[in-house]
Picture 1 (cartoon, rainbow, N blue to C red):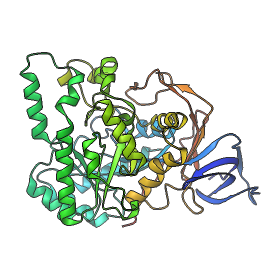
Picture 2: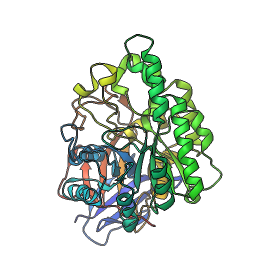
Picture 3: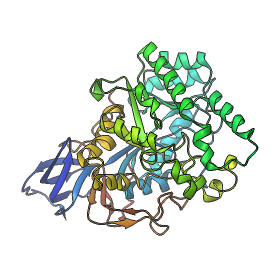
Picture 4: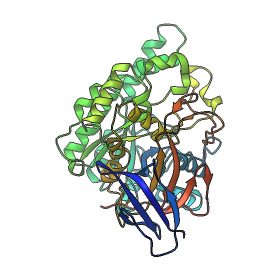
Length: 446
């Protein structure tokens, strides 16, 4: 494979930004220093005026394969991710069929091995009646990112609301447990109450139906189970101010047993945006009132929220249209998460080093990912080069999701991803893809 020397670039890594050269050899970072002279054949990239970041690791995406490939495939969404500087992803089990067996789990790994341009891992799915099979993931804990528990309704039979099943999963799992936390009983009660008002429901009702209490009560339940058994719990896509009291910043991340995540859409949109975007921003958990967004930002910056992800969940525009109750929930975001967060760097809301921590370092630490997430000699060369001076407007001509749309259309990103390396392979450079190599299955320190 080709070797690369990136010259005179600003390297953002582990709390610092330094100008240096970086040498990539045989897929890994060979050397980081000023004035490197490579003793072997290399392709040189001029990094003057650019920034080099560790590739983003997105721990929560829905790539829809198998069974829902009219919306997306592992190939199409991984390609979109690469264009946005995302070099690794962890994908959800609510495909068709749901990933309720180890055979179905390995089937997805086989698809990714053939088609994914990015590195990958897949969650094992859980239901009220597959605990035996789900807990077999313990046998491959170094090879699977975790098990996923939907503590709020999802597609198929993925809702786990049997407390005996939950108790066993938290008691016996040796791998990370990731949860979607919304209380289904509260949601149903809210829905019936609002329906009794005898008016047409709209997307603006979504945060009233899937409200703060539904999120809080479910997150509290998950945390109580985790504390009972000292389980390794990771709570996905926090969306409310009240939930922030459940998480702490007292311990360093590598010592936490309970960690928390925020998604880019909950940091960007608020309930004020339903008037303009309607069902396009309908997602679970719901985008809520502005004071929730402010609380999420505060918790992100003080480390109660440990990392940033997308919950990338593409649907066709047809599936997003129509009456509120029939419109599918979920947003396509993985191509635009890094550029969107760079917008907030430009605004002064978050520092560039802190952003890299939350989108790369912290994800690697949280999941124990081996040799990724940092710019270190000997690590895999998963890297993104960004130009903080080159803006781009999100539009149909540059959206790579198979669904073909984005809730960010018309938004001008103030920065662009110019190059993306995966395992030292330049997959994406100045708008051109080299699809001659696939990504790798991630492994975990457990």
